[in-house]
Image 1: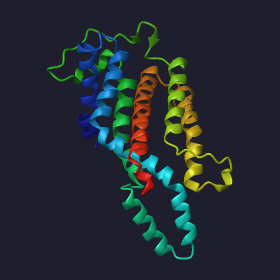
Image 2: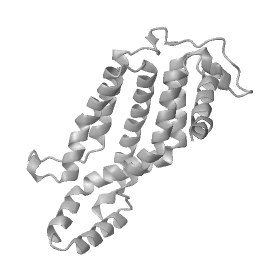
Image 3: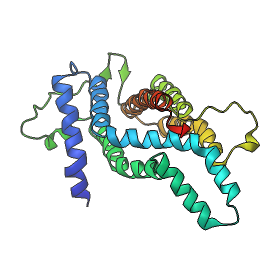
Image 4: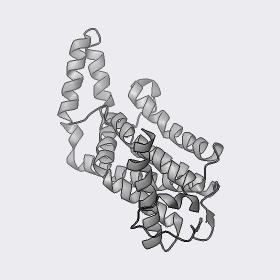
Length: 242
């Protein structure tokens, strides 16, 4: 299993990073990481888009879900049937975000291994024959960020981006009464703050190199732009007014 993971995910991602570093990043590893992140997000765009869209719709459906639960609180079968009908009406899968996590988790692990262990010349022996081996890797991005060590500036940007991504996924709710919120709405609001906290803990407390932080920042910024586009589409199409 370890060899399969190495050959299917870790080695291709490492080779892609070196290829981008040699040919498209002006020998700036930070730019190569950003380009690799964008490449991965583009390849997995349908999955990320579906997961983010379904999450946004589920947040906006929370009042209707709460109404169904209230109307059928004594009949779980009718409640389940009404829920399924609501999901079909809005073409949403309530489990899509979990499926997305399962799909991308191995990729995230492989990327972290690339950034944590692959930033030395000792890893060049796994390069494909058609990838030109660099003499060395320049671990300073833009001449100022050492990608091999923790960088508080990168961490702060990643935390802020994570917060905005969480805010954008929530439905607008003018009511300040948190008691009227459904469990789904409350969890969504909590994750707006838990996401940034976990990002800070993961990157700062675990003392991860800024190469990991740069990947996290880039993929979250991609998610922010994607969520803006999704919210605009939902508003224009009026999908929740059916």
